[in-house]
Image (tube, rainbow, N blue to C red; front, side, top):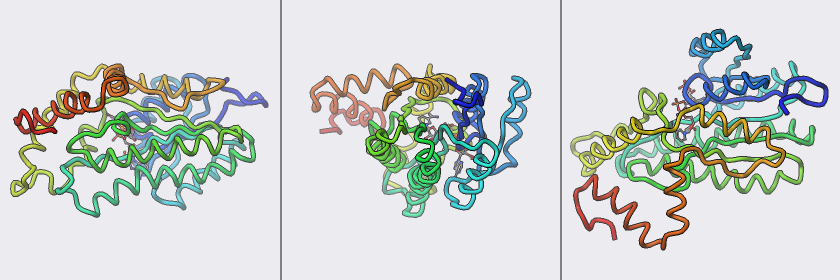
Length: 296
Ligand SMILES: NC(=O)c1ccc[n+]([C@@H]2O[C@H](COP(=O)([O-])OP(=O)(O)OC[C@H]3O[C@@H](n4cnc5c(N)ncnc54)[C@H](OP(=O)(O)O)[C@@H]3O)[C@@H](O)[C@H]2O)c1
């Protein structure tokens, strides 16, 4: 399943492979025998992947690719086509965070998170499609999030980008399946990565003491950190689902990663809406504001 008709290893491109989930997906797929192109916006950050690849005895190609820069996308893809003649799969993983209550987010910050998470993902996808169409096959994966299914306070803009990715992928899968190209959405729960450290993406205004929301945001961040620290889900869990989506004869549209998030999504599906809203969203609001009846 990891080799094409000519007996060569299938080529897979991963965006945002310098760290976190992208790094683990790259290493795992290379270990399973794929020919993985690890791409990153800043090649000076390739040290980690080079070191880990060497430790695991893997050969991984590293290319520069900023998903918001059309030239860098086409240069990277042309290089892969020149070297291998095909792109079997694209893993849209690169993304940034934006944290803060909505009124504390600037227009500029909101545009930036959409530019990367949504328009960047669309741009790379658009660029690989001609190659996949002419091959009559291909796989496009998008690392969305459980935050693309359930919104949370303090991350309205980020969740909007993830809901948008979900809508994009779900629609695109219908357009492309007759052409032999499968789209899958990988929906991880909270996982401890750089996302919760240096790449946290707190909005400039989120901690502004003059903001009505700053105290609520501070408390919501403490809650988020507790969830991160206690999360049983790991980057490898995501990598395994990615592998499943690449090797299944008929890949699913959705792969959820993390049983806690899966449980919440199930509750939302089967509980009466009003009850779920009161229990789940109401509890979040109560925990950060202290108001027992703050939600509906
Ligand atoms: N961790 C979680 O809890 C979690 C949960 C659900 C979904 N996700 C999603 O999973 C994906 C990976 O997240 P992560 O946790 O691994 O985050 P991370 O550790 O912050 O890694 C994000 C990666 O994206 C790259 N990136 C950012 N902007 C880019 C751009 N314009 N072009 C190319 N690469 C860019 C970063 O590159 P630099 O090294 O240059 O910054 C980094 O490699 C994201 O889409 C995220 O939304 C994460």
